[in-house]
Image (cartoon, rainbow, N blue to C red; front, side, top):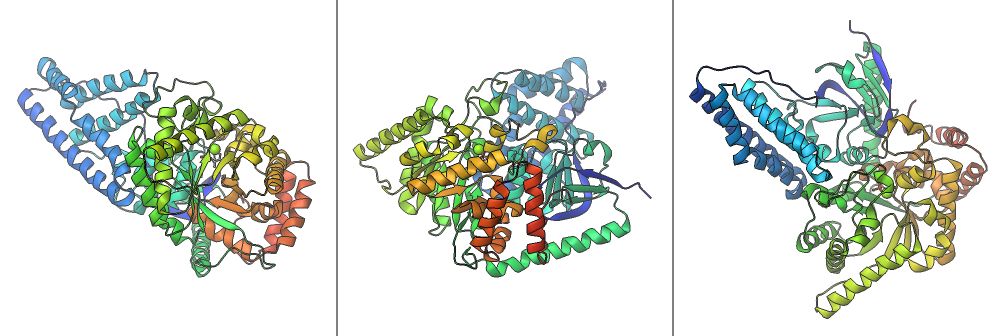
Length: 588
Ligand code: PEP
Ligand code: MG
């Protein structure tokens, strides 16, 4: 019997998935030079392979369009365009003719050259295209070899557990969700955008496993525990039975939460909070409704840019924003202006390679430097807001000057809309993310200038603890329960209260059941998290009192270290909610 092995990583999307592994290997496939006898036959073979590859891509394009809409489906257009690149394919044919080499070798040699050329470019957009060229190359060589390649969209039709060294956000958008039981990756941290997206898809996921892909073979049975962060290869029969039971129990619990979908999130002593969802794509509005959210607390609009492969124009943005507003059937939505940069490269913007991208040219900094980019977005949002309740917020504000300047740009935009006689909403509250320690520390000075605060703990923790949120080596220091972070949250909440503006939290901490009561007790008015996590958080809110939450928060604030706070919360939450199969602590 195969030896059982256990890994411990970061649980990033809840639930338990077990099944046969599918490995997404990205190592460069090299193709040996081989000579052929019949050149015409080889050229015909190449044409046939191109045709088959094209047919596969069309199929994947249709599948993506059905699941995510046209914007995502366009990713496959890039691959189709590469396949139709005449100069590149002329070079391949020429090489076959002049050197009598196999079509595999010629395709590999020429496309690999193109990919290398892209990789050397400064612009992240072109560097990302290298990946696309390699995907097309793998697909084509696979067709010529008559074998399955491991291009992401070729995941088998049977359900499987996806293992990969790393996945980028665009990969996740391409996943054939119905076939993926669970996801596990070597790289990544809990708040990387990859993790956030797998959570959005509602697929149990664990990241930061370091070397798992080197030890697992395709078809091996693996268990991914997205609640505890454990991954088990070749589980023994007893363990398998235990996981199957846990999986069943958890699924039944999640199913039972449908009963509270239309209930307000109100504590038993009558205190209401709003439970909102974070979304990345307009198509996720359905999940917001399905999970009983009060609205959308954060729409990460930059995903429109990432999936479009460039900046969508005002009209395209207007349509996307209007559609999502209409799909929410009257529930409010908060649009955040593009938060590009960091781990969300901005295609075509010429962002140079930065040593510290999270601290670099990112978010509002890009927006203020490029008003030609920010203005059409503001116009589109204010025009779309005519169709339903919408708010606007600026990401990563670190100084008051930035806020003043962002509001000035907005005033210019509104004046232009007015002068052009274009209809727009006059009722859009304007707020800011509090996700940089400087703005949390000065929250009382920012508060008079905004209509609301939204605390982004993913970045706030990253900057407070000086820890890269996507780096598994230092993941242990990404501590939302560190007293330094709790104090910054409290300062922000208190400043909001003084100025009588609502304070929401939209970082991943807002969806962590371990912290639900603590956050209530700290005085947050709204929590916004992935749609699939809303029901569990709601269950905890409606089973608690504000009084106990305040007491728990006071006790937690008196502690000195993150482990102490976690231990205290864990002890309380586990005994208080022992009848609910919620995993309060990843890693157990
Ligand atoms: C955050 O930083 O907490 C946040 C919500 O924004 P993002 O994860 O998109 O950086
Ligand atoms: Mg952020």
